[in-house]
Image 1 (cartoon, helix red, strand yellow):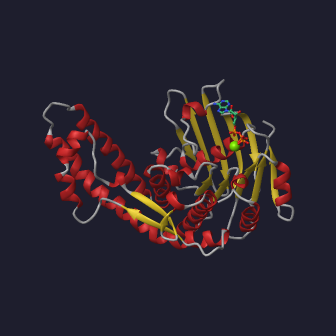
Image 2 (tube, rainbow, N blue to C red):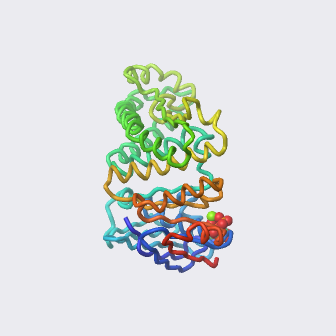
Image 3 (cartoon, rainbow, N blue to C red):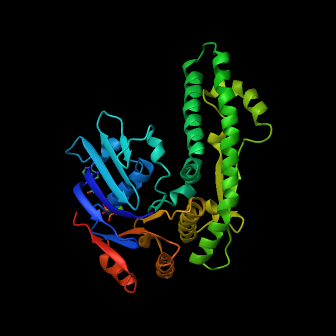
Length: 353
Ligand SMILES: Nc1ncnc2c1ncn2[C@@H]1O[C@H](COP(=O)(O)OP(=O)(O)OP(=O)(O)O)[C@@H](O)[C@H]1O
Ligand SMILES: [Mg+2]
């Protein structure tokens, strides 16, 4: 996909800005606080209807206003998004509002690399699940639907367990939830387990391309949802009741990142962790391209700050390859980027801030 132009209104520090992009590499430069990351986040919003950096819609509106709008013109379609305080968020594809906001997700495949993405290695399982769920949701809207249903039912079951402290619990009602949660857990975990197999060759290729030192990256899927899950889930009710939450299910799934068969979280150096994450994101790019037939937008925020010179050179070479379509890259150091891309066709966009 190609994003031809983007109009931002009251979106963080962009009060009323329009940007035109080229179909190759777009390098967004400007000093700290100019609004480079905000511009990438606006592009992300149009693909996922939410922020990549985790901020709420409310705080995304410019301080002085009550709403923000985004309007993206792509090759072949337009996507608009508006959020006004106190109202539901609205999206329009080619001027038409889909029956559900989530229908927008997957229309414009996108991969973003953010400066603190390595936290995905260090932190709990949620971030890693989010990554693979994001990948699956972009290629399979039934999966996205199942995931949203699961999260809603889990929340309801958990609040039932919480609200009943010291009181007899309505077992019949709990069972209504169980009967829906159990099969959903099985299906969701199955999809997650399968994606590893499809994903791994892409990860290995990208890791090698960036860092050819005979290191072998790997992925392992950890789940409680095995053959006997239904029985275990039911037998666990007493424990759930004591802990006041659902202890078993696909919400506990995890993905282990390994390098040469060892957990990268424990044994990987910072450089290895950074290379792993960038390879993982580029693998997501290849995976989505392979699955959808469309080249995703690739958004790289401050990526040069994360790498040493030799890896920066390798990356710049990679980005120039035909397999990548439209790329958006930010850099606070304009001179560095101009030098790195000297022999490449790059559209420089300067944000004054
Ligand atoms: N809701 C808001 N209303 C107005 N301004 C906001 C809002 N939210 C964030 N900002 C401003 O946006 C600016 C940050 O923009 P952004 O993070 O895009 O900068 P950047 O160009 O990526 O900088 P850096 O080079 O440091 O990464 C800050 O000045 C911040 O005050
Ligand atoms: Mg930034």
